[in-house]
View 1: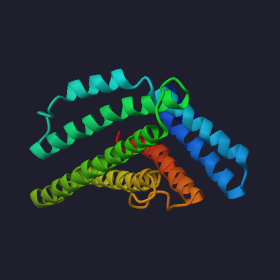
View 2: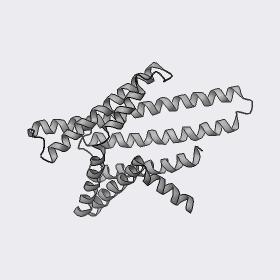
View 3: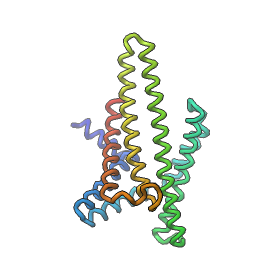
View 4: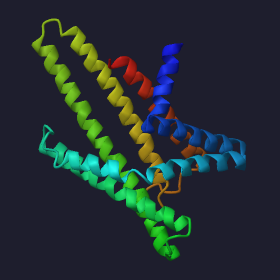
Length: 231
């Protein structure tokens, strides 16, 4: 019991961990509000979403440091992985000021025409979706490498390297779940785009909330699974 409490406290003590919990609470409230047609619950979910966005207003410096430390990805094993990593950092770096501009417009500090504000919001959502898509490509590449490593291990060892193979199997399972979660997140992100952009605005709010809640549950479950399985 104490171990579980410690894990939960560790989750809540970190910025990313608490964001996972707030995200789950946000979309769970929205889902309940949509299913029961309860506006106060939907409003609570929106306020929690705004709380997450407010905290992201201060992500620039950590993101700049991450981008600087990554550089041109010279530590990556392939040129393609390095290029993908650089592009991912550029997209994430661009997302933050665009989201800030949207927030400044919402609170009335930044004066923009309705058309400009609409385009800015669309760009913000597109960057979000692009970041998720790049992450999915990176995860798929990681899965492919793990399968290759697993096959090489089996061929090189008479007994298949039981412990190492088991470790690779666990990593493969976790990476596959991450890929599934990213697919849910991409579906969610694109559904927030304007009508005419793929399936933008074609998925009902209840289904979107269900997708986002499921993704949030997976995110928290993955946090605990990695702590338990990748020791």
